[in-house]
Image 1 (cartoon, rainbow, N blue to C red):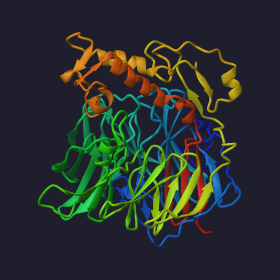
Image 2 (image 1 turned 135 degrees about the vertical axis):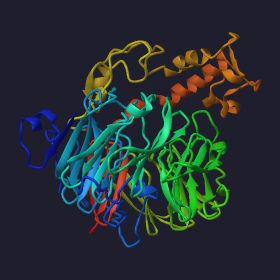
Image 3 (image 1 turned 90 degrees about the vertical axis):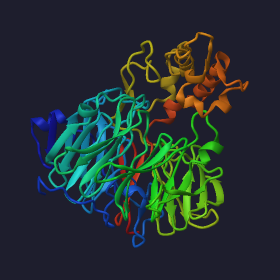
Length: 560
C-alpha cells in the first residue's frame, strides 16, 4: 500500500499514516518521459553527487558554524534513515523507515529553503525486520533528476515519484524478480543513474545482479549476474569514448559494464576489502577504496586502494599506482585538487598525490567518519560521526583552517520519537536480542544500573564469537576438529596468515576461539556507539550543506 500526503492535506488518511505527526522543530512532469540527472550547482542528485563527492569550484561553501550561528534550520525526520539527502534548487529528498520492525518505507520531500514538508510517501515494507543498529535502516541513498525522485530500500522496494507533486509514477519490488533477499545486516548499496536508466547493484546471499531499470516505467532493461555476498559499495557511471559505463568495485574485483546493454567490457581481480567504499572517478582515472577486513592485514588492504587508468579503451584498465599503507573504511576515496584522501576506521586521514600515489602525510583526526568528505576547490570538508566537521586546505601538509560542531558533544540531542527495537531474547537470535520490545533511543547510565546482569550465552550480544566457532566447525566434513582445504570459509582464506597461529594451513578449535575472542572484543560497546546522533551523509550545493543524522536534518547556510 502506498500513501501520498501533500502539503496542507488534513484528513483521516493523514492521521493513519502519521508522517506529519512527528514533531517538526525548525530552528533559527510528464508520466511517460523521465528527466535527466541534474548536475548543476544547485543540486546534489545522488549518492556522493554521482560518485565524486565534489561541487563546482564556483561555489563557496561555508567553513565555520556552531550551535549558536550558521545553522539555518534543523528538522526532526520521521522514522530513522542512514541514507544521504539529495537536493534540487527547491527540494531536499530523504528516505527513512518507520516502526519497530521497519513496517513502513518513507520518502519525504522538504523545502530547500526552510525544511518544511512539501510531500511525503509511505509504503508498506516488503521485508520487515528489527529496527536496530544491527540492520540497515533506509541505507541506500535516493536519487533525483529534473522530474522525479527515486528511492530504493533494503527490502527490495523501489519507488519513483513526481518531484513536484509526490504522485507515484511507478513502484515495484526487486525481490519479485530476483528472489528473496538474504543478508545478515541488510543492503546498503545506493543506485546511480544515466539519463535513461537507474542502476542497482543488488548483491546479497541469494542470486545477485547488476540491474538496469528504465526510469520511465520501472521495467528491467537488462540484468547482469553478480557474485552472491554482502556488499555496500555503490556503482558509478563513467562517460567513456565507447559510451557510458557502469563501474562496480566489490567482492575482490572491479568491473566495467556497458550502460546500454550490461555487457562486461573489463575486469580487475585480486582486490581485498572493497565491499564498502565506493569507486571515485576523476577525469580518466578511477580510484578504488578498500578497508582492512576483520582478520586481514593493513598491508594487503592497502594494495587494493589504488588508481586505474581508464583512458586505454583497447584493454583492461592498467594500475597506475597502489597505496603502501593508507586504507579507506566507510567513507569512500575523495579527490580534492591534486590529492586523494582516504580515512580508515580509526579516523586516520591519509593524503596521497593523486597522480603518483606518493603518501604525503597521515593525520589522526580524533573522530570516526561514516560519511564521505566533500571536495570544494582547495577545501576538503571532513564530517565526523560525532557532529564535528573539520575543513582542510589541500596541500602537501596537514593544514586545518576550521572546525565546527553541529551539537554540544556533552549533551547530544536524542531522537524525540524514534524507538530502537530489540526482539525478545530467543535462541540463535543474535546481537539484537535481550532487550524486550521498544526502548528509548538513548539509554541512560541509571537505566543500565537498574537492569539485572544476565549471564552471557552464545546467543547474547556479550558473546557473539562462541556462536561463530560453532558455525564454522559445522564445515568440518571429516570430523577431525579442524578446518582445512575446502572446509575453510572463503571469507577467512585471505586472513589465514593472521589466524592460523601455527602456520599449518588448518584452523583448529583453539585458533577459531582466538579469532572469535577478537571478534567479540571488536564489537564490545557497539550498541552504545551506534546510537543517534550519528552523521551518516551530506549533500552540498550553492545554498550550503545538508547534514543528515539518523533522525535529523541540519541545514548550514551558504551565504556567510
